[in-house]
Length: 206
Image 1 (cartoon, helix red, strand yellow):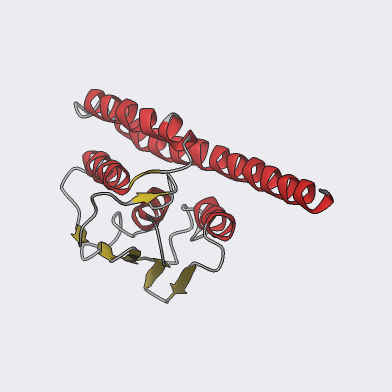
Image 2 (cartoon, one colour):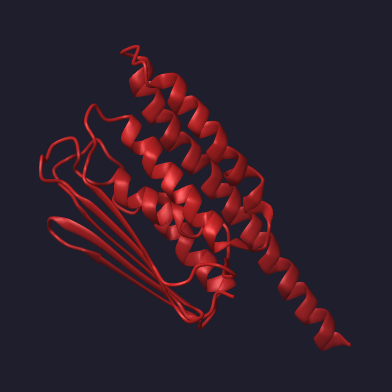
């Protein structure tokens, strides 16, 4: 009985910690997106209303769906596409963002808001503002029950106006992976001189 009670306490602690980590992700995501909208509003861009509308759609997912233990992978990927579209709106001309999806995503489930912060990180820290050859590549590949996520973005370490590469997002994701997928994931981060690479494998996401 003591062992069972101790196990329940551990589970309750982990659930509380996951909720705390999710609560950290939500405002971080919101603040970054609001900054994009603010920059457009200062120049009275006609894109501003459309960005506000798309942000409201994303927030429904971020606030409500992220409270669930699992969401469909298809839904998480749909929100990634919406976030990329929202990011593109803030630019005068479309920037080089490539998103590839491979494998059967139907019927697969995942911890909510696990992949979106990785995409957000790649776009936020890319040197789109200062490099005409800047790029961000994102690939999600499903192989059986395993998920492979890959992102690579160009960067400029001389740009001091941005947060430290990685920021809140990656630290948060590391903790959530450890709690939700213990011994079932691999996360590799390569911070190179002119690019930033993230490789994530989750062995079983069903």
